[in-house]
Image (cartoon, rainbow, N blue to C red; front, top):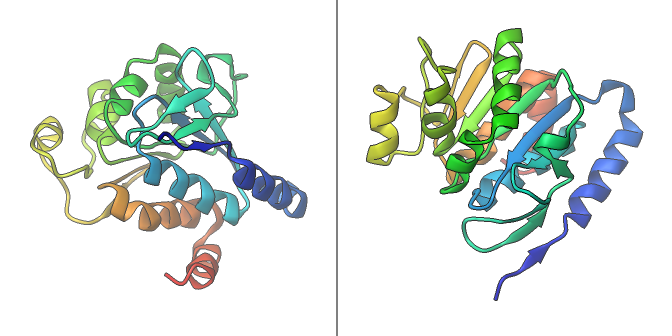
Length: 206
């Protein structure tokens, strides 16, 4: 039976965090699609909200409801094609298949990713998305990166860097569900500094 997550806890936590640190909130976009990976999505969003970020989950589908790769249903905050133009502090793509392919094929998301890269602003992807979303758009050109260690993704990258989380300039990549927390904490480090990342590690017993 498909379980439904309405993100009430995440939204409540986000509202509380925004009230506490409204002046310091970083704006983060997490695009999502049918077939995106649940652990990666929730780990990334929850960790960034804990850090104080204002996280927007946006669907590339026709509506805001998306069915994840393992059957969980989530309701996004908005559709990607309905977002106001924004200079995001971070755009981070979860993996999962066929979710990564659906992110890749979204024209609205393509424009956002290219604008983020052109500004040299933080851009990140995990699991299949480095190979499926970023690589075909040329966003990993001359950069070290990693991805989920499946042959099609490894072949798409050509060379996979060592490490669960690889940061090269303003682009950060990671391997998959099991590395998502380290990935998310690295993103916290980039947005809020090592002290905040260390604080969260202690709170989360990492």
